[in-house]
Image 1 (cartoon, helix red, strand yellow):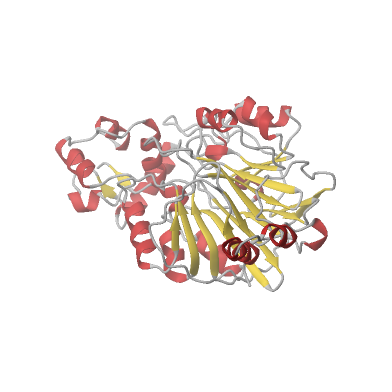
Image 2 (tube, rainbow, N blue to C red):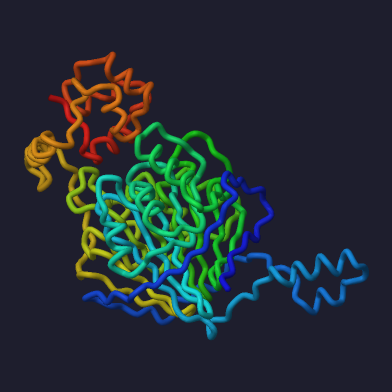
Length: 434
């Protein structure tokens, strides 16, 4: 029988009550490179408070009410698994281009578990295809760190085509068509829904999950990114979505246990994240970047690469290594990847034509897309404009009122579309100006 428990004391918001069951089968992928980390066990576990043991219950059962409570505690208690009892876990940092997706798979007794942290970009099926190729037909916990299309992009497809037991979202909202599709898919599914908060702890079989962000929502979706530490035996993995430096500092200030063996670098390796103080606090042995080859933002940024390498941390990136799999037996880690190579800074694309991802190449891509997918911001209807990332009815009307635009970058004239949101719209590749 699968065990999945909320062990934290903080209040949790459930919007859907139904809870399905899920089983998963995951085939092992072997990459062309492999590296062992024999002495990488973290000395600090997550500190999840377990319920009373049976012996303690028997000592405290002085009344019938206490006995009933103790029996309930006994039924729900989960003994922490020792490393000797663990069957092994794999964390697949999926090559999803300029997007995020990571699959955690492990077993306990006769039960298989699958947790997916982020789901890739909306304009691809690469994450769904990867799950299918590796025999994953159900997900126990489906997590969207924050509601941007490069993190929840394929969540609706997963909900519509796989059994999903629980969905975790931050609670932040956007006006994008992608977000609306995801919410519709959640509401139409049998999955339970939860918005985890910092300080809460969960147990999924032998895996402990500690939420370290968000503490509360501010309306800044990056600041609200779900960030979690996954502890398996004596090994640990930290994910922070697109949380930026000020949010990392807040995690430190709240006193969370952040030390982890593997750190997924925030915001695709952007210099907005992975501050020196945060890197020092986490003190990882491995750092993973999820970034697209020749992406227009130049991710991962050179400052971050140097910061990681100067700290003696082994660095991997999907744009160099493809999908990266970190295997844990509860004490040691092994890394396999599709290819080998060193992570280097990628130049940002510009209009000079000097970069590999030149504006002429982007224009060519837009021209190729225009016959089918391009949404011309100078002529599209309000309904069509809402298909663009982060564009809802109000913003679509604003776009229509401010026409004409000299280019997609001119959308900064629209209320609510700043530098970060414009980057995401441009990355999406759906909008054009003709």
